[in-house]
Image (cartoon, rainbow over the protein chains, first blue to last red):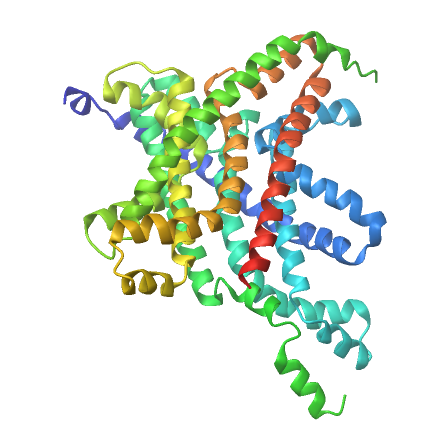
Length: 245
Length: 220
């Protein structure tokens, strides 16, 4: 196997710093997109549940458009076609981050929607009965119960957000994949460069998957279905009856 | 700003050519992924042994690496390692197929494991031979359960074929991007293909959701 004897990883070692920066860009962008997508997904889900048809139709259209078109097309569209409409040009990083955030928030909207509607109606009624304002009952009563339900699904979305960042390299965002391309163009050692990049992605992806699996085991994958199936939850009714409601 | 969507009609042959490449890579990837998924699923369902552990490792690795990275690796590293040339279409579709195989394995496994245990016991009680239990009792029920996630994964795979653009395969996304760059009509071309993907994927995904709801109602 002369091909293995001819391998030379020292060239990669020489470019370890740019590669590290690429990895940091990848991680930074996936974290930023994911944590910006959570509030926007929550907002979308809320509009979908409480907004009436005026909000419902545009949100539904947005979510479906984001879920049913490829991220690559969305990223290129936002970078090249959107400036034609708005007249505002964005850097590659900005449009990449925007595309990724919008894409992920559509998925999070769906998750949050099923999470919020899995909370028994009695919880809303009870918080109304004790005189809480709607926004207080949402943030202090409903939302704390939603998190454990949606955490497993959110963990999976976090893993796929990390994987999707690799696509943003096409907009000349200097993430790990793009840096690997650039290094390869300089040293002409595709096997070593791309194998190293793949191994780094694999290590990060596996680490994230382990965390996601732990979250899923901790909070139970079928809890959402279970709670939705036995709605209204018996425990709540018993509690209310005892208080004479 | 003036929009001129007629330019898409005049470039329709080139776009259709791209659509053909997209569908071709989708078909190749599916032709690899489907048998691979079945094979891996069969291996993973064993209680122990090398095959089960191999399938488990395969699924973990191929689900953790981004498709993009896999496509680049297959495009640049596989030809020198195996010693013969491959086109971007071949290596890209191969990468998509190998990744999809891992996902399909999990879909099939989930479906088989959702079939109630009593079905196995009933088959054994009737003294059916094992292949007959598999083919005539378990598979028909599991196949029904696997349809919605399978269709959903097919839409993911179709979206994944756009990644071949990055290694220079002239599929739909790359063609319209290049046409947009040549004519400075990015908006028209990019909007048009986004709509094409949407129009194809939306009804299929909705159909899958419909079946899923019907199945949930039937099994409750």
